[in-house]
Length: 217
Length: 184
View 1 (cartoon, rainbow over the protein chains, first blue to last red):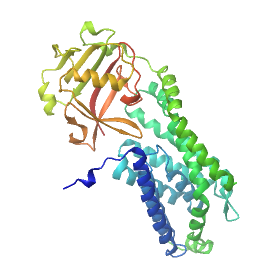
View 2 (view 1 turned 90 degrees about the vertical axis):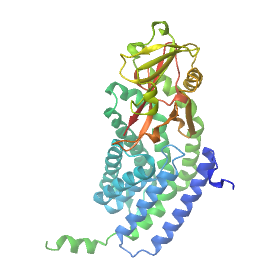
View 3 (view 1 turned 120 degrees about the vertical axis):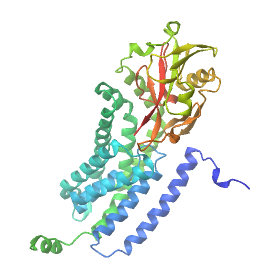
View 4 (view 1 turned 45 degrees about the vertical axis):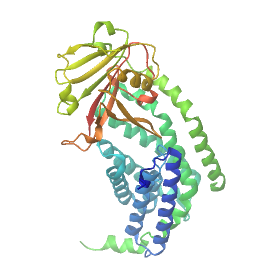
């Protein structure tokens, strides 16, 4: 009996396979989004979480290139800080437990991505103008967020190493920081507009928010 | 903007992928300038290994390998001859030393552990992140169980945490590298 499932893939073959799987997941998610009710914000957030977790795991062969940073930035801009924070922490925890490895750094990643969601929420009026995303501005914010996120998560080494190790550690990881920044710009360029349109379809209407805010406890 | 950014961002990422190895080499050399060598890395090792390259492997005391080296740290020279056991070092395992002239960490590790005649044989995978050592002396880090989420083989270089994997480690004369099981 041949052991067909014991084939060793090269990193490039593995990347090709993963991109193919991710494409299937993305296509399925796009189809699923069409069947969501309008203003089904939580349904949309679940689809984003699935995309974030699978994207982070399947793009692992390219170091630090993953869609999560851009997703939480957009979630902040469209759905506000609390939902972006929930999305950030869910993706960090789920992907680390499933595949990437769970430890103290998960907390740093959840906080780091949560802070990026907060930035998205605070700059919402600048990022989305007249219903359209300002791609150039978002690309700059996403690239800067990638660098800031990596430097923040790097602080988790202080649990195990002396503070004198921090500078060489950051210096040594600069290429991976650049991967994150460049990857974010690619994701903004290719998917921010279609994702923004989808997310806008599932925003709560202003009238709904007013009713909710005015309702007695 | 989006029309220009799409191809430009892909070109930028591909350029980074192509240039990454040479940028990384440059940054690693630069980073080492900020790391102080721990002069005590040779403490407890045979004096004849002073200024010679050494590898040490520390096994958990309750592992089969730890029980094999339960007397302390066994010192093995480059010819595979046991020089003795240092019982004062807090650990169970072996050090192999007396080497010189190695600059690549992986080459040194593979050659030096061969001197221990199988007791320190190394198993590793090669991925996009580089070489990942999963097994030393038959002890696979994944097989180490306890009150923790997971375990891995941790590399130290001259007494400090190594910033790079063994495949990217640049060694100098007198360097000491050591491996021990760490958990998270």
